[in-house]
Image (cartoon, rainbow, N blue to C red; front, side, top):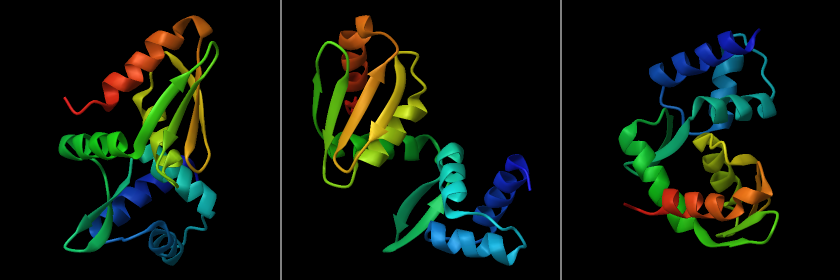
Length: 148
């Protein structure tokens, strides 16, 4: 099964079912005859921009719209505790367990200033495309985290 077909099936399943988490989605994919590894599914969800939203006390996986993008930006802004930089890199300190989400959000911005991110539990290492862009990149991140 190729990536395009797999991601199309994921979209179809999410549109037709209330899916609370990746484990449930993985089972629905397997029930439909698709053998998918958890790591592959996780990458697909990140690439597709799938988010988990709580509605009436229950989680549901869904595709973001403009309102969801604003909500995510607000949540990421709350999760970031500090942004520090030196001559070569930027470090973002987050709430415990939230670095992956913040790193993923930064990756989805697709900024030409960001070469890549590496996330731990509560720290995101942001690697710039050039050390000359450290100040501009730090400002860019802070601007994108503001609630305006």
